[in-house]
Amino acid sequence: MPQGAEWLIILAIVILVFGAAKLPELARGTGQALRIFKTETKGLRDEDEKKGEKVEKPAELTASEQERIAELERREAEIKAERERLSGN
Image (tube, rainbow, N blue to C red; front, side, top):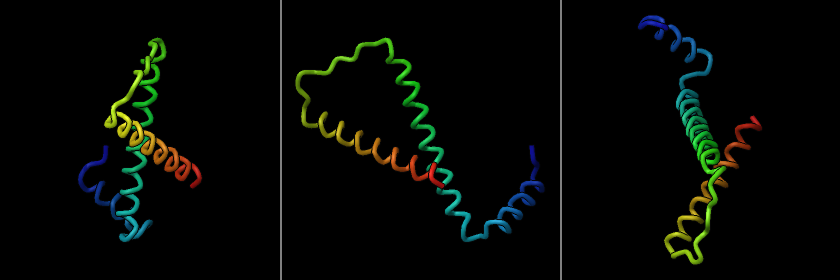
């Protein structure tokens, strides 16, 4: 593992390669990619847990449940769009 002075050298090289203006953008993109990765892996684990279970839908959903479902579907569409955008780069 790099020690204190080695981290400074690595940071200097990164700044030289990418430029100081690009570092916040790189950090933001990395953070988004990690969040998407965590979300997807959690979703896969949840799917694996539910494989053997039979999921029954209630006869009627309340308005708040319908809003929650719509919000989740919107987020899923955003994640899929972001995944496609990142895989296209």
